[in-house]
Length: 286
Image 1: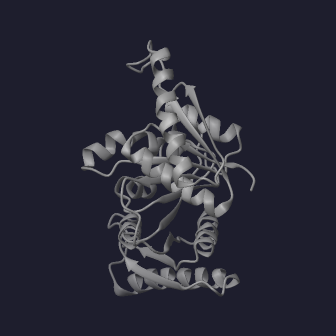
Image 2 (image 1 turned 120 degrees about the vertical axis):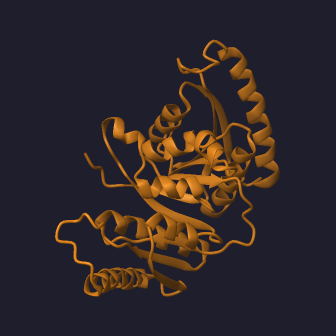
């Protein structure tokens, strides 16, 4: 298989869950795994002057990771290394320069404040990486089944749907297609508060779901179900993915400072995600 699965690893419980997930995926796909510990020596880090200590700490953490990998996935080729710099910038740059097929990072699932603060690295990596990113929450994975993908009728949404179809086929699990529609804001020009508008919006969402099922026709072995719901897209995806093995979403590439920001749907999903999420980079925007 071309490329590797790169794991941003820090030895934390969330990092260990992410590494285990990456090892299981590598066993199934035939990829090598590249475990990277980033010693945060960026200028604004509290440990800016402690590079030698961070280097040694990273080596100890990676030695433990190597032992874990050898015991859980002995047939997977695993390499590890310590690199220095800003964790987000370094992980994104290393993934791109090495041609990684996937960059895997962990995400904490505690109270909302801790998720917003301790998961900042995973959110920023998902927003700025040019390769697909898997964000793995610190949650049990047993008993889960199905791949969830949301569709919105856009060209970028087609790429996300294709990835969802491929993942469901690889896992041999059901594909759940979610098409959410919302009511327009009252301040919209020419807004008409009537059933005709609502019926039209719902029908559009239903036709989108039908088209997505037709696209999945190349995989007749797939079990597919669709949900057309009146809800905010992020909320609909989070609800649908509560017991899923995987959720696939898209992130629009941006330039300048905006490259560090996720769209509202992607951001909300990753803050509240109930399952592993693959964030697929879709068409760049200004």
